[in-house]
Length: 312
Ligand code: SAM
Image (cartoon, rainbow, N blue to C red; front, side, top):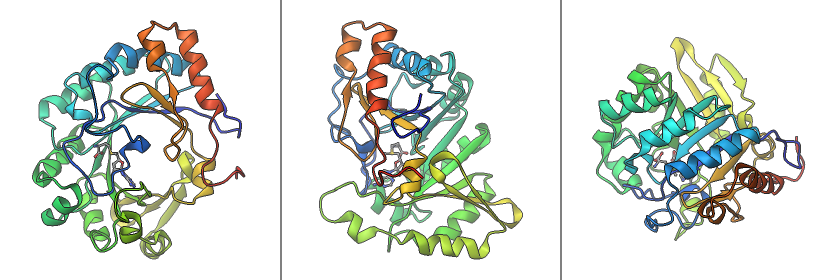
């Protein structure tokens, strides 16, 4: 389905839980202020609810699903969630964003068998003390081990590294070597202004033009992805770095194909806005697929590019 700005909407990001076992200093909680720590079991979408929304979404043109949180691995029925999505007609790709700290070989295998194709592992630093400072957790070793397990099983793994001035912005090339050695892609993510207490954005924001300038100097190839116009840089000996620059980026918005579903059943047209469309009441009342499709259509119709009203 296309939104009023002509953008094809084919990607659904599902926050399967609001709970997390970390407390990153910058976390945007997927743009949903009722996120981490407030989750009540009564409101959490069940596997059947998620499946119903995905079935309806698939008929609205959704082909790709990204699972996120909170931390998805905190959900004991995560394998069931993955099977419920992968067995839905029309869904071609399922991936997950995770901090990887709760992985075991068994769970990685089960998720893979369930249809999870790709994983984004959040790893902001290779220095334990910096990792701990950013995530406010003591799970560095678990995260690295989890990443390595993923790299052995999934066809594509990316490291999500949010760049933070004075904390990890001097580590790009160390992280690049690490990623290349494990056959994974490094994704450098611009800090999004999440309105955290204090001025996290002002203090830690990195100039992404400078970062990309440094990448251009060393890269042997360049490609602009259709997905949110993300630049990808290719290096000698096989390394790849992708850059995600959402802030004040009209190209990013113009090429955004994504809507979101929160852990408690709200549809969000955009990460950056607080607008939500409630589907939880409809689900509780046993809504039909066509009723759910109508709510998805309302969400898609409400989309507008956050950083520009001109679609490039
Ligand atoms: N707990 C999981 C994890 O750590 O990947 C999934 C949830 S986390 C909110 C999803 C992704 O959003 C992570 O890669 C994280 O780094 C990124 N993220 C969170 N807050 C952000 C911000 N303010 N700016 C940019 N990226 C952010």
